[in-house]
Image (cartoon, rainbow, N blue to C red; front, side, top):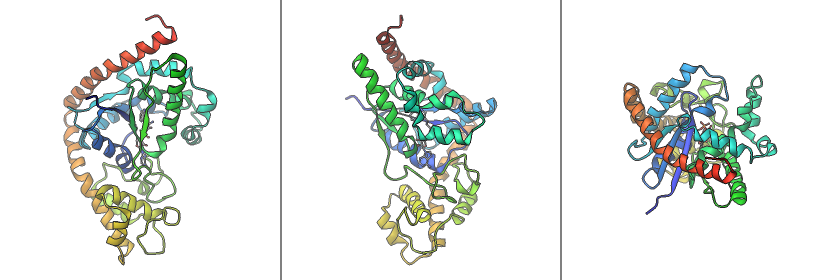
Length: 330
Ligand code: TYM
């Protein structure tokens, strides 16, 4: 009765967005019953952009609190901090020697991020996907639940794993992305042509999971729509309304057709308010639990220490196997 294994992570870059929640966390919660799950805080990845040290430490702990508040059961999942398992970094170095510059050059996230941080295009930003591949392959994960923006990194992970396996024989499980059709790409509320991102410069573009209900309602009321006045799904011609429908659909479980029917003949104002309310309701228990957990850092520490112990067992096995195969004396 071997359960399939799942690994995923989120960067500890501060407040999470509704995109992170609907594209990743919410799916993780649903997977926890059926799979053996490893959910990590990607703190090393966070260093590719300059951070305040204290801020990063605080964000890391807050993210653990958010994982649990969102519904991950710490008894049933391995929740840990990436940097607590040094084998990730070791494997990343080794895999980097099996990854081509040309492959990394093609990564759209590298191109985007280096345009955004033109004054700090460090090599960590470039080799970021290799560390992500190491995160995944070191646990021999079968599935990796991520939003659409991480799919390219996952394809590269598969290529690296296949390359390694073809040289050294069966070593890594070839992981599959697990991306739900709905919620995989939540767009900004002000600019529905671009994904909702915590680094957006317009605060009304992004719903943060920590936003107060009034703030959430206000942001939805201000969401950009179109002049047609019909709640109908068409991301090409109606990106704003389609994005709101997408959000409403993931939260309520209703199909696009059901939503179109539900709001037939109603104005956008009414629809936007309904979406806002659904989000507020969904986030209410998460926010309450989050606040409660933040008051209890010892409890959180227990979880990530225990998580690291569990994660280390598998990570050590894989890194030793890899070291032996490539010819390192262990
Ligand atoms: P990160 O921290 O940027 O995002 C975390 C997760 O949230 C998803 N996401 C979205 N989904 C839908 N709509 C959006 N607007 C949206 N914005 C973000 C992301 O797809 C992701 O699933 N490199 C990863 C972290 C990482 C990782 C890993 C993930 C490090 N190692 C190993 C999986 C496996 C990242 O930066 O995600």
